[in-house]
Image 1 (cartoon, rainbow, N blue to C red):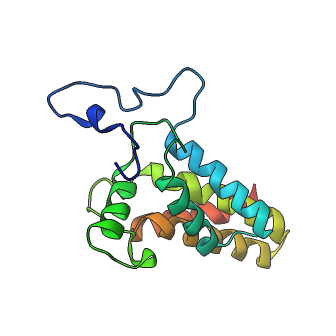
Image 2 (tube, rainbow, N blue to C red):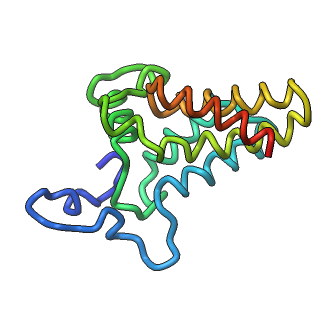
Length: 162
């Protein structure tokens, strides 16, 4: 597959596999690997830049061997279906199935973005706005979700106040 690199047998509905069946003890999930991608992007750009992260996300997900997780959430599968099957521009690939995309795992990347932006933005209104904006922007790189955007904004506010 385009993003799960040889893990298709683990998606066979006739078989019962754990979501993360291919991970060895101590290996991180795909979402944790994406946190690392986001942190490397922040380190190289010196700020939270959603477009730069999106570029690195697309590159990482398409690189064979970039991760060993057999599970990719619906948001990732929909994103790449839009990119490859529907030939949408990368900025138009985030999507929503009105069920699996509006879930708590969608807050993993925004929480990291908010923490980075809050740290850089410092105390006060400017730092709080930076944390909120970064969380919302990074959430939107992989998912088209109004509930997630609302939750990411609140998370950004909370991360700044932490």
